[in-house]
Length: 110
Image (cartoon, rainbow, N blue to C red; front, side):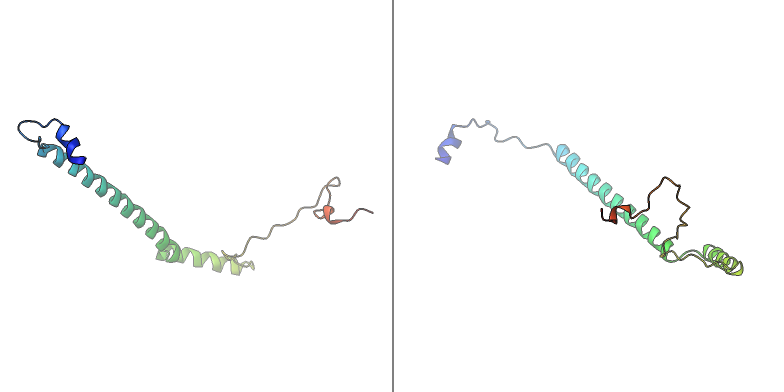
């Protein structure tokens, strides 16, 4: 059945027309350019992420010196240097007379 259908199709007298090589070359270059751009951008983002990671794990010597000087200054003033992992303690201001306590909802109704 398949061969009968093909027999009905019109064939050009000179055979099938070849695709010009210029079109194939242009499409090949478009694919290569797109892939090159993709890999370049992936490499750029990977380099950027690595630089950020490196700067946070190993600061430059002048930054490290400034950090050490600041720690020594804080120790000399009697203040403890805040650690980056510890959250900053918030001082609770006095509540206004009309404000309720934070655990007002925990109290059972009589």
